[in-house]
Length: 398
Image (cartoon, rainbow, N blue to C red; front, side, top):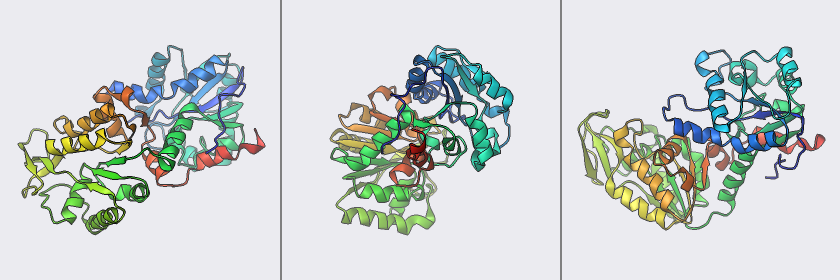
């Protein structure tokens, strides 16, 4: 995908609207995790500031509800980013209006400001022409560095591109490049590790993976729908009951495609769905009635580690257990450590998976951490990306 890039453009004394992705999961208490996500924007910011740009940063935080909620103010994000950059960021707590436009016109070369949460405006999601025009009046050039929002047709990702010369930021470009190469030419054997709770949320992803992967490793709650479809007792574990037939069909399809499809061979289970409940480990024969599967067991971890060690490419999305409870993070953390030890090209997607990588202290050992979350899965599944299409239509400006 030949996206227009920022590296060769002259931004000296130009006002740049940088659409960043600072939509951090507020329920996460790990500042190290948040910092990993914030740091992804730093190469683009440093490049622009060092070239003398006047930088106006916009992002959303939380859901695009179109109403002001102090809990989701960008003020704390502005402070955190300022500390990471070692540069002052002026936080604009006013609504976007002519006064803010005047402020941006008076900015000095190298100065940075951050707008309040774009999600506070209902027009952000609705994308009316007049709001996109209002955003464009803040700047001379637009740069999109938010891969996670590029699958949405927002005023700040699509509408604004109709009014300004528009480019991809460094992080957006890397996300697209890495994921495109994953689809086109993954080093073999290609191992896909899929976890989380629902098969249905990854159905289209699986369709694409089937045409490329050699081995699929399944973990998390979704594995119990697969096991149930094979008549393996799963106790009171989470199930997508309406998806059992589809799960069985998916495994059959993998067999016909000569793909190795691995399910957990042992399980850490709890008598109650609670961190302080009595726990034990059981094997592939099944989970007793009334017990809940909470994590993959040690035999599964060892088996998956061996496969990861010999991989050429590994794509991982989704936790192996109930990571919201610390006791059941062992499987997920061990997968993260196995990826770090592997010589494979490793790509990790999803907040829980990335959180495990950060918690294990191995984020610098992973080839690519895709912070796009759902957008990563949508890209691999071949879904439309209106914001990328908008950047590709920049012929009238560039």
